[in-house]
Length: 187
Image (tube, rainbow, N blue to C red; front, top):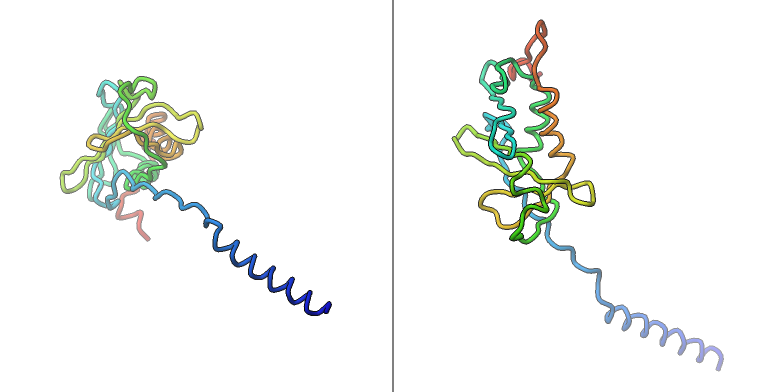
């Protein structure tokens, strides 16, 4: 009798556990990861421009075939290829952390006018750009507005800071220092 009772309890427990597992909803599905702002090949990037909110050029640097990176504005000089390549390596496919519906009033996000604008020009004469607003309250993302893309985008503050760090100090190669070109940078 005790063995029959034990067997009944085990069967009931197994059936109850299985039926409960079937009725429990699975883990919530994560929303899809937003697509990056764009995706370009690093070698296709020919020019990087950072402007203030009114459109004044704060930094312009161009990649030349044999000369490597050259600073064009605010002064002409050989540029620090390492610093520019770090910024470009993030800019070739800026990952979107989140998207918000476009707001009628962009001022709270410091997007009207924006704090900065970043433009990439590629070898095929395409231009990609976005406007940079303020850092979000979480502290790890920045509000961004991209022409032709609906909504406000949140990008990594780390990536945006890498680009804006080019403004101070400027990525100028000190005089008397050998300029590293793309040809000499490769092993």
